[in-house]
Length: 238
Image 1 (cartoon, rainbow, N blue to C red):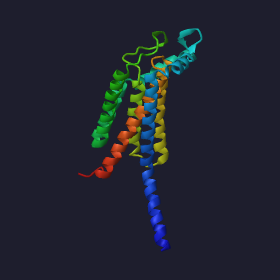
Image 2: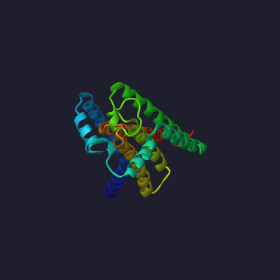
Image 3: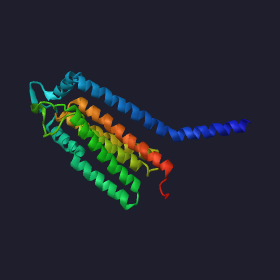
């Protein structure tokens, strides 16, 4: 009886360890979605504008909104980093990575990269059209920017592409330390891209925060979809 109880306990523990990633992903998806909805509500009601403007002005030299704080090289670095979230660069990354996956016959991963990125673009553009939020004043913008401001497409799509890429690459790695480094790098790039948009004055902070939340939720949703497919049709079958 004792051995049976120990065996049952061991099976439940093993199951919990296997499912902890799924539970964490579901929780993250729910929290990120709720956070986005809360930010969107504040933006729609106009409650976010005052703090947005205060945060943006804190990144400018007092009395001269056209001059960002910090050394001159920081502006160059921010401009370089923000390009990592442009549609052109992200499209190149997606097509290159999807091509690599296809070359090794990992069709599922290739399809996920393309569908996650394409769906993210459609969702971002749809929300921009829905909210129609104006960008910061032209005097604050240090680079060119088009279309509406909310949510930040750079922040959202960089989160979608880099987090999805990191999660897919992590599937081929056994060591947890390496998985952690891959995901940390993906998160770091997405955060830097979003921060650069605020520093360059082309987005309000709430635009970027909403983009991060929605992008993370979208990427997590696709990760969960891949896990479900793996359970139903394990890779290599059929």
